[in-house]
Image 1 (cartoon, rainbow, N blue to C red):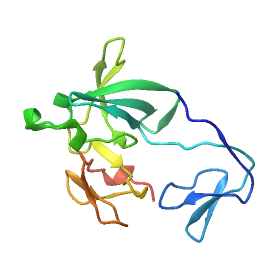
Image 2: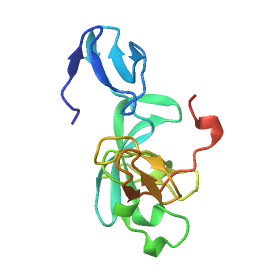
Image 3: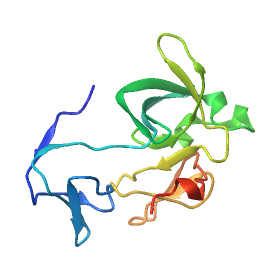
Image 4: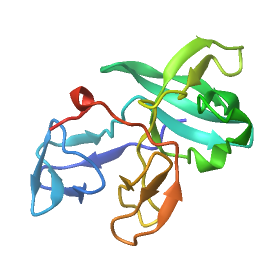
Amino acid sequence: MAPPARYCIPGERLCSTEEATAGSGTYTRHGFIFSSLAGCLERKSEDNEVCSINSRFAKVHILYVGSTPLKSTFRGTIRREDIRATEKDKVEVYKSFRPSDIVLAKVISLGDAQSNYLLSTAENELGVVVARSEAGVQMVPISWCEMQCPRTHTKEFRKVARVQPQFLQT
């Protein structure tokens, strides 16, 4: 279910530049993102957003395929055994993903009627690309299995993607 729509007017401060990236219809000033148009605020994410997790799998919404945004979201599942390529029996889902993480994953097959697509992050280039700390700040990867909040310096476990330079936005 989609979150309720938020309307904005020109000049309205939407959020800090730490929380999001300015898109069309916005501008940045003094570390904040402002609306330059009147209308409905739309937050776009990359690839897959984690919706829920349990000890066996993570449920995600597929939002992008490559760089193409989808007109509607599709559901996917990342099973515990598809999170890492090695030591699959030692993987703990809650130490790999958290709800609202943005994940880069590969479709490995069409799943059953409940999960739709089966996804994998079992490559170094796949995993969490964006995560927010409990303080609401975008975390920074510090290793292949940890991210850290730049404000509170709290460390959290994640299956971190090693994003290739050609996929980084500048």
